[in-house]
Image 1: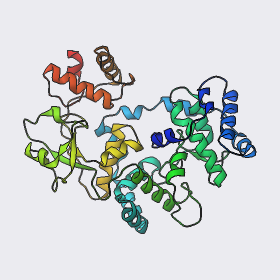
Image 2 (image 1 turned 135 degrees about the horizontal axis):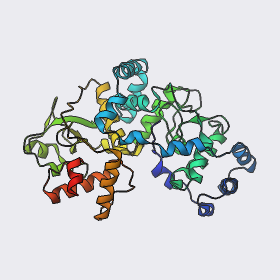
Image 3 (image 1 turned 90 degrees about the vertical axis):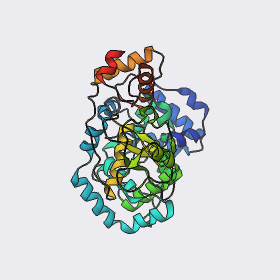
Image 4 (image 1 turned 135 degrees about the vertical axis):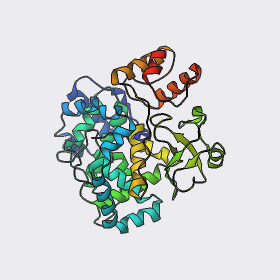
Length: 390
């Protein structure tokens, strides 16, 4: 199951209370008692609070899943080929036709292209066929009690209580992903409160059983996160010999006309007249894309660069785009080598985040900077040769 934290910013806006000082860890029963007190202090009826927490328990399987996200260590080409199949493309296009009127509505009201939502629908739950079987309330409480990222999950518990009071959440039976996401496009409780839409007109927001509700809610959420109506998000490009690789990366953004002056060309069609960044997921010898402003919204849905790029690319395929040119990228690093590189970069003063073997944004930026210092092509792709130089 892929992990998404789309409600981080929203969660931070939920009213804080003194009980937040309770922190994390310690006795789980005492932790739940603290949650009950905080819920009552927020104005929830004591009887509702007792019913909500009646089946509360810690879920060891949730913690195991949280610690085992090795899929994000795969490079883009491997990851995208694992997730994208002709069958998924065919089914996505068929689902687009089945829910054509709903996708037209989403495009009209929120400006979100159908391929974008179809890609999320495919990757999150295989078009609704597998939505996760973890008890959502217990998953959220387990992760809030755990001291790795409690600030992300604790506010979601109180959002779930509000959904419970609306009749749209059952703490005993509502299930979803291990990280607390619910429904066909996997939304966290606070997302549902903020962006949940009744797409089928039954008076409820039921993202598990209603594709109309799920898709319309997903479109509204993307819009609320800053999706720019009617604009592209990703386009494959070709780069000229002698391109200055240090200008690649999401931290380097210029206009399409400036990229064109440097010899950047769209592989098909023309570059959009927008600001953009050059994305080289596996260095200068691999696939190349230009990421437009809407691409940044993907990171509000999922913080993994590999997932985001794959989802964005898959959206273009669902709308008729061509298969990317994989090129012949230099060999990357094993998990152990990647962690060793991160340790060496950290020792040189770079902030690479956790030593986790994942090529995230901070590690990419550090690699590109050290490549510039060493006089190497600064394409932010880690290789055994770079590791040896360090």
